[in-house]
Length: 161
Image (tube, rainbow, N blue to C red; front, side):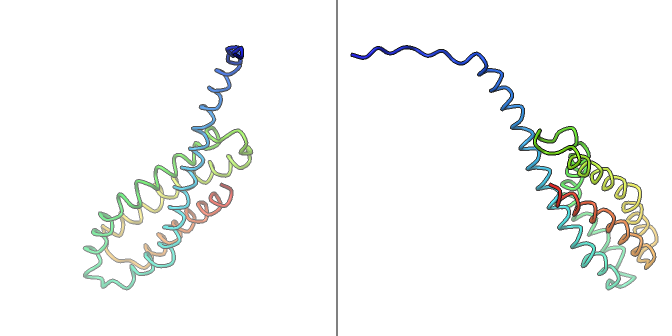
Protein backbone atom coordinates (compact mmCIF):
# COMPACT_ATOMS: atom_id res chain seq x y z
CA UNK A 1 0.00 0.00 0.00
CA UNK A 2 1.30 3.40 -0.92
CA UNK A 3 0.79 6.47 1.09
CA UNK A 4 -1.21 9.09 -0.72
CA UNK A 5 -0.51 12.55 0.47
CA UNK A 6 -3.27 14.97 -0.37
CA UNK A 7 -1.95 17.98 -2.19
CA UNK A 8 -2.98 21.47 -1.36
CA UNK A 9 -3.64 23.94 -4.13
CA UNK A 10 -0.91 26.45 -4.61
CA UNK A 11 -1.75 29.62 -2.69
CA UNK A 12 -1.41 31.72 -5.85
CA UNK A 13 -3.73 29.52 -7.94
CA UNK A 14 -6.95 31.51 -7.34
CA UNK A 15 -5.32 34.81 -8.32
CA UNK A 16 -3.69 33.19 -11.33
CA UNK A 17 -7.00 31.65 -12.33
CA UNK A 18 -8.67 35.04 -11.98
CA UNK A 19 -5.91 36.64 -14.04
CA UNK A 20 -6.36 33.98 -16.73
CA UNK A 21 -10.11 34.58 -16.88
CA UNK A 22 -9.56 38.33 -16.96
CA UNK A 23 -7.11 38.09 -19.85
CA UNK A 24 -9.21 35.49 -21.67
CA UNK A 25 -12.02 37.98 -22.34
CA UNK A 26 -9.42 40.38 -23.76
CA UNK A 27 -8.26 37.67 -26.14
CA UNK A 28 -11.85 37.04 -27.23
CA UNK A 29 -12.26 40.81 -27.59
CA UNK A 30 -9.24 40.84 -29.93
CA UNK A 31 -10.80 38.04 -31.98
CA UNK A 32 -14.17 39.84 -32.12
CA UNK A 33 -12.68 43.22 -33.05
CA UNK A 34 -10.55 41.53 -35.72
CA UNK A 35 -13.54 39.67 -37.17
CA UNK A 36 -15.80 42.72 -37.19
CA UNK A 37 -13.03 44.84 -38.72
CA UNK A 38 -12.39 42.25 -41.44
CA UNK A 39 -16.11 42.10 -42.19
CA UNK A 40 -16.45 45.88 -42.43
CA UNK A 41 -13.23 46.34 -44.41
CA UNK A 42 -14.38 43.76 -46.95
CA UNK A 43 -17.79 45.39 -47.28
CA UNK A 44 -16.12 48.80 -47.47
CA UNK A 45 -14.04 47.78 -50.47
CA UNK A 46 -17.10 46.16 -52.07
CA UNK A 47 -19.04 49.40 -51.61
CA UNK A 48 -16.10 51.45 -52.91
CA UNK A 49 -15.48 49.42 -56.04
CA UNK A 50 -18.95 48.03 -56.88
CA UNK A 51 -21.99 49.17 -54.90
CA UNK A 52 -21.63 52.96 -54.80
CA UNK A 53 -20.32 53.30 -58.37
CA UNK A 54 -23.33 51.28 -59.56
CA UNK A 55 -25.62 53.94 -58.07
CA UNK A 56 -24.91 55.77 -61.34
CA UNK A 57 -26.23 52.83 -63.40
CA UNK A 58 -29.68 53.01 -61.82
CA UNK A 59 -32.09 55.22 -63.74
CA UNK A 60 -32.89 58.55 -62.14
CA UNK A 61 -36.59 57.68 -61.88
CA UNK A 62 -35.88 54.28 -60.30
CA UNK A 63 -33.14 55.53 -57.99
CA UNK A 64 -35.29 56.66 -55.01
CA UNK A 65 -36.98 53.25 -54.72
CA UNK A 66 -33.67 51.45 -55.26
CA UNK A 67 -31.91 53.49 -52.58
CA UNK A 68 -34.77 52.95 -50.13
CA UNK A 69 -34.56 49.18 -50.67
CA UNK A 70 -30.78 49.34 -50.26
CA UNK A 71 -31.13 51.24 -46.96
CA UNK A 72 -33.62 48.70 -45.64
CA UNK A 73 -31.53 45.71 -46.74
CA UNK A 74 -28.24 46.72 -45.10
CA UNK A 75 -29.35 47.12 -41.48
CA UNK A 76 -28.35 43.65 -40.20
CA UNK A 77 -25.55 42.61 -42.56
CA UNK A 78 -23.81 46.01 -42.68
CA UNK A 79 -24.92 48.64 -40.15
CA UNK A 80 -25.16 46.55 -36.98
CA UNK A 81 -21.79 44.78 -37.37
CA UNK A 82 -20.14 48.02 -38.51
CA UNK A 83 -21.17 50.04 -35.47
CA UNK A 84 -20.31 47.17 -33.13
CA UNK A 85 -16.91 46.99 -34.82
CA UNK A 86 -16.33 50.76 -34.93
CA UNK A 87 -17.18 51.25 -31.25
CA UNK A 88 -15.27 48.20 -30.04
CA UNK A 89 -12.28 49.32 -32.11
CA UNK A 90 -12.53 52.82 -30.61
CA UNK A 91 -12.29 51.25 -27.12
CA UNK A 92 -9.57 48.76 -28.10
CA UNK A 93 -6.70 50.76 -26.61
CA UNK A 94 -8.21 50.11 -23.17
CA UNK A 95 -9.52 46.60 -23.84
CA UNK A 96 -6.59 45.08 -25.75
CA UNK A 97 -4.74 42.03 -24.39
CA UNK A 98 -1.60 42.82 -22.42
CA UNK A 99 0.68 41.50 -25.16
CA UNK A 100 -0.75 43.88 -27.79
CA UNK A 101 1.52 46.94 -27.90
CA UNK A 102 0.09 50.32 -26.94
CA UNK A 103 0.89 51.74 -30.38
CA UNK A 104 -1.21 48.99 -32.00
CA UNK A 105 -4.08 49.66 -29.61
CA UNK A 106 -3.83 53.37 -30.40
CA UNK A 107 -3.94 52.76 -34.17
CA UNK A 108 -6.99 50.50 -33.85
CA UNK A 109 -8.75 52.97 -31.54
CA UNK A 110 -8.01 55.90 -33.85
CA UNK A 111 -9.38 53.85 -36.73
CA UNK A 112 -12.58 53.17 -34.81
CA UNK A 113 -13.04 56.86 -34.02
CA UNK A 114 -12.31 57.75 -37.66
CA UNK A 115 -14.92 55.24 -38.82
CA UNK A 116 -17.59 56.52 -36.43
CA UNK A 117 -16.96 60.16 -37.35
CA UNK A 118 -16.71 59.64 -41.11
CA UNK A 119 -19.89 57.56 -41.04
CA UNK A 120 -22.00 59.76 -38.78
CA UNK A 121 -20.78 63.15 -39.98
CA UNK A 122 -20.25 62.40 -43.68
CA UNK A 123 -21.57 59.12 -45.12
CA UNK A 124 -24.97 59.11 -43.41
CA UNK A 125 -25.67 62.73 -44.44
CA UNK A 126 -24.80 61.78 -48.03
CA UNK A 127 -27.24 58.86 -47.92
CA UNK A 128 -29.86 61.21 -46.44
CA UNK A 129 -29.16 63.67 -49.26
CA UNK A 130 -29.66 60.92 -51.85
CA UNK A 131 -32.99 60.13 -50.17
CA UNK A 132 -34.00 63.80 -50.35
CA UNK A 133 -32.83 64.85 -53.82
CA UNK A 134 -32.49 61.54 -55.63
CA UNK A 135 -29.57 60.47 -57.76
CA UNK A 136 -26.79 63.04 -57.75
CA UNK A 137 -23.29 62.57 -59.18
CA UNK A 138 -21.77 65.05 -56.71
CA UNK A 139 -23.43 63.33 -53.75
CA UNK A 140 -22.32 59.90 -54.96
CA UNK A 141 -18.76 61.27 -55.32
CA UNK A 142 -18.91 62.61 -51.77
CA UNK A 143 -20.27 59.29 -50.51
CA UNK A 144 -17.39 57.51 -52.25
CA UNK A 145 -14.90 59.88 -50.59
CA UNK A 146 -16.43 59.29 -47.15
CA UNK A 147 -16.41 55.55 -47.72
CA UNK A 148 -12.78 55.63 -48.85
CA UNK A 149 -11.71 57.35 -45.61
CA UNK A 150 -13.58 54.75 -43.57
CA UNK A 151 -12.36 51.79 -45.65
CA UNK A 152 -8.71 52.85 -45.55
CA UNK A 153 -8.98 53.26 -41.76
CA UNK A 154 -10.50 49.79 -41.50
CA UNK A 155 -7.81 48.30 -43.73
CA UNK A 156 -5.00 49.85 -41.67
CA UNK A 157 -6.67 48.66 -38.49
CA UNK A 158 -7.07 45.15 -39.88
CA UNK A 159 -3.40 45.04 -40.86
CA UNK A 160 -2.42 46.06 -37.32
CA UNK A 161 -4.81 43.58 -35.74
